[in-house]
Length: 387
Image (cartoon, rainbow, N blue to C red; front, side, top):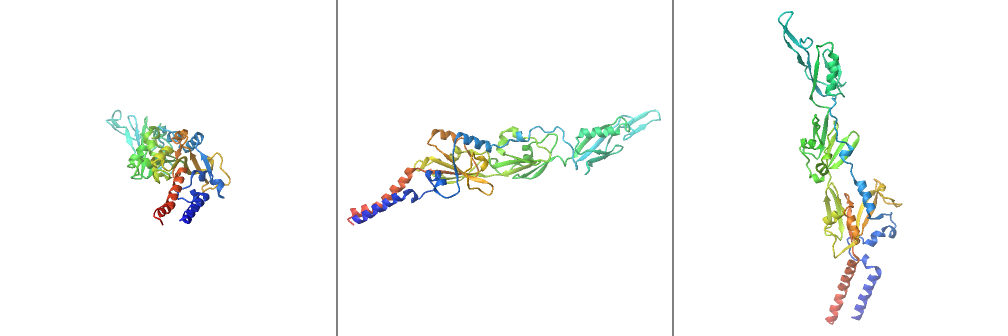
């Protein structure tokens, strides 16, 4: 009996000497192991960054998306230029007695009874050279000009040939001034632009709206070689972002289910989705069930993330990096300091972040005590039973 008790005591002493935290089950590294990961192992360096007000401001500045109202403007051209493929209708008026385009009815050679003084030419497309043809005026350049400009040019050409001509040009079919709406919309379509200057939400409405939840949809506008994007919720909430569209714009609705993963001593270990507008670390902790009182270490809240090297004030060398040039960074928050509760209200969570809360040292002690009881209980019971 004494030999068994002595052996159990030696075993427990060996556990203590070996370091009980390395032998007990755990959901991940503790605070000490994360902070010393770059020195304890012969692996590429991982930078551990303390979350401060300066760090938070820098991350927010890098995350800020350029607003449509700033990047694309909100003042459309008042008059749209015509383009090849558009169909135009030309109406010409002449003063009485109309002679070039109109027909006059006379009683005799001295008196005019009536005159037809307007003529509408058959609609015609602007050809590949950008021109239309008007009798007695010849080929008129129309592409790149507005309707009033085309009217002025035809009038100038007919002056001296027609009797005080007046010209009205209308676009009957619009094929050049349009935007394309594609992506996660109910109906991908091509939306012709009119003098009403259709806006972004007008185009989405014509496409019968988006198919995915608004909170998970991003709208991308391609104008020329430039691409800009904003969450759809932001566009709806801020009328300034509902900009007027321009010919050639491509509007793409993108489904972006963003999420982060919560691990460690949190109320829920899970992959948790969030909105395209983004959430703060405080919101992420709340959605993951918060810190577990019986396990968590308030000084050991970490966010694991891959960052561009340019985001960091100084990247350690040599550092691990992905093919895209991203380096692993661990952001450390001390919620034992009341100031940390203010910082997490601004610290941004990004897609694919891993939120990890380490166990408190007392939790490891509790594991040891549980093991001690498990090993000593048979010995005590055996002694009581006289075994």
